[in-house]
Amino acid sequence: MVSQLRRASVSVCSNIAEGSARNTNKDKAHFTTMAFGSAVEVLNQIIISFELGFINNNVYQELRLLIESITNKLNALRNYQINK
Image (cartoon, helix red, strand yellow):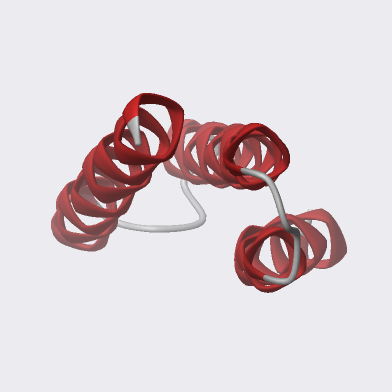
């Protein structure tokens, strides 16, 4: 689980980096969508960690809020890229 969580977390920023190097807004939006998917995967791993008792409620709530903030920003970025 730790390995999967690390890979998904790295995937978020890697997709943003790769997308920023693309020329078209459509390509950039595609990689932003991939980053969003990876962030949701991180959220899923956090939920599972909480349900299995690996993290307590305080940590779970804090991480959930951070991930929600990140996904909201990714969604806004994608909308900007599509509508630009």
